[in-house]
Length: 526
Ligand SMILES: [Fe+2]
Image (cartoon, rainbow, N blue to C red; front, side, top):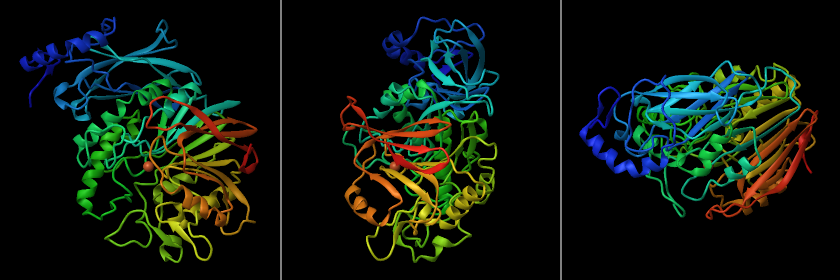
């Protein structure tokens, strides 16, 4: 390996040559700050190392995770070299860093693509902080993070957004510009943060056609992170994450991809994808992958107002129902398939299902289940018979029954299920029995449309709505995200839609607004 940079010895000859080449860019990008004395070593980079921006995530009352990755050339691993690099950070109570409340140093390791994850603790709850990183003579852009309110402290209102499905090639991530304009306090990403393969690039290109190894997943994540709107949204506030299939492979189920390649081969791919995912997001140490395993599900609180259960519906799921080794992905299948109701099958896995039993236990007003999928039933077949999507909770009715029983027996009346994946908006009454319109509504569901990913099945799905009276809205025509304003009395959801994602300029509007009154499950159109 050619070493470009050595923290102790300075730079190799090739590194110095590259430094000269990168000087022009570096001169523009380098801010007028000296590296604080508490950063040891004086690494120098071929050009500005904070090209992928900064991010914060997983807010707790006393802190959050801060993230960056040193990437002077995001597509060339040699650009930083093979040595660990010291990275300093500062957290301040004001955007100009006059009142620095915390500073420290971390190490960017080459085996983690020189990513840095700092778990900040000891801060005040329920307020914004500003942070930045230092490496060598360079300083990162400033990000803003928010601590969560103190545990079960009174919170009167909270504004957050959720999003999914951002295929880079098909459009601009400009919906994030509107989230910033709406000044959301939290952004929840529900999956398809990247797409592992590229099959259609009408607007812009990614550097990898079909990722299978670690380097390829890293290059994809880097390409996505170069999007200015995405970077700005990460710098705007703290995020929370779960994933869907495309962070790894289309329509995968636990250890099987859709083509049922050998499990060993697929698990190697999954390990590479999970590692690259961890390296590029502000996730806690508890989520650090161990080979092909990564614990992503978790529970966080917004004071006494909201409990957020982040679920993983990919890593532990049983195989899709009634499928053959030749065909493993999403299918529309008849409900005659006996697998669907098999209580031994699960979409969450036994361990996560056991953990979920504590949902709502702390007594917050609203209980949120944040996950990647459509939860409610969607019968695609008009008239006699029922056809459902095998990938969704419809294909795992045993699991869904257990969740519904939990909501009902625990009296979690103010449960809101949020999802993504389908590139369309669904607004649903979550029914005790979806086949009986008179059965009680136990919860409310909002599935967000995609940031960019297309939908070609709007008309057919709208036609099927006659057989799905609990689905109050299906709309596959628009791209955008979902904005929520939560108080103790009501939950307001604005469906924010954007103009043509192939055009960079933004026009954003609310297509429809739904309200849930506390104590009365089921969204009502405003
Ligand atoms: Fe998607």
